[in-house]
Image (tube, rainbow, N blue to C red):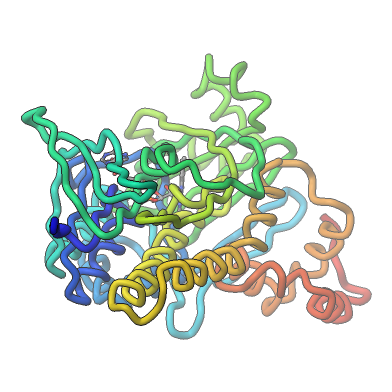
Amino acid sequence: MATDQFDVIVVGARCAGAPTAMLLAGKGYRVLVVDRATFPSDTISTHLVHPPGVAALRRWGLLDRLVATGCPPIGTYSFDFGTLTIAGAPGTDDTPVAYGPRRTVLDKLLVDAAAEAGAQVRERFTVEDVVVDDGRVIGIRGHGTGGRTITERARVVVGADGRHSLVAKAVAPERYHEKPPLLAAYYSYWSGLPMDGRFEIYVRPDRGFAAWPTHDDLTVLIGGWPFAEFETNRTDIEGNYLEMLELAPPFAERVQAATREARFAGAAVPNFFRKPFGPGWALVGDAGYIKDFITSQGIHDAFRDAELCATALDETLSGARTFDAAMNDYQVRRDDHVLPMYEFTTQLATLEPPPPELQQLLGAVHGNQDAMNDFARVNAGVLSPAVFFGEDNVRHIMSQAVGSADTL
Ligand SMILES: Cc1cc2nc3c(=O)[nH]c(=O)nc-3n(C[C@H](O)[C@H](O)[C@H](O)COP(=O)(O)OP(=O)(O)OC[C@H]3O[C@@H](n4cnc5c(N)ncnc54)[C@H](O)[C@@H]3O)c2cc1C
């Protein structure tokens, strides 16, 4: 009888794949994680890691390593709506700060941790297809630098291969909560743009931009416009980007005094969930659930998927539960957790003015430090939008603001 060479093969070795491999290898499973990239390497993504992502790194014993790379902490989130600014602390007592590590640093750290946990890491390996037998995924087929086709088998193949996931395309799972791309955004790195531990976001009609500090004394500055303007604006990205910053004159002045140190990179992404499991396969990270990056949730969402999926796979590989029962839990827990944030994110990404009730609420939040911290925590993925925008909380904030609320 043929035996599987691996318990789990993970395709993709960044924010979702490397931790999934690390966690499963740490439990003693035979894990192969492959990526067509080599590490360290960059990818098209900015990289704000909110406190829940930082907490995951700490749980995995990796936070000290990140801090040792000299990545500056971010303790304040500031939301400038033009007429008022809401500034608050994004974290919790345990994990008070966010970080903005370059993906060259973060992803390498995660890949190394997977290898240290015992996973076999194969870089420069491109997966061309999944191998299916009797309706069940049983392995992958691909090639390394030599070009020779190699087949590897496993009890489960995990697609952690990002938003253009080949694994997802091959298994074609159900998609739901689908919305089209909503905005197009571009980013670059600037020197001489000090942020003093702050993440700053500027919200203007049809425009939104944000900046925060990263490695090497650089600041990442991303900004964008509605997807409807994608085609017209792509002919002059720099001009449109700089013109956008003029909507916040004091910030534009700071940028004028700074130096751009890199080319522009950018993207527009669709919004949808995929059913993240089926016979012999699972999906984590962007492969399983993708949404606009305006709220910067993707990295910690990928970390959470890695933990939930690794737990479910452990339960099923160890024989404690059936695959379907354990993986169904993974899907339900993922969806329950992210759905309110998904709705909040896709609303923000329209770059439409906040509806009147929200304007009123933000006016009441302004100046109320507890409420401003909570608003920062919503954006950080620490506090659910369902709680913050829930009737009781809104009533509470409005009652504290009677007679003193500002208007947006
Ligand atoms: C412009 C932009 C800005 C963003 N900003 C933020 C932010 O500030 N904070 C945040 O949290 N999130 C941000 N995100 C989202 C974040 O980048 C993603 O959610 C996150 O990278 C998902 O991680 P992942 O591991 O699922 O996928 P990825 O990081 O995309 O990794 C997938 C890996 O799979 C590999 N792969 C793919 N196909 C194959 C194949 N056939 N064979 C072998 N290997 C393969 C790729 O080489 C890649 O290394 C941003 C996204 C964009 C586009």
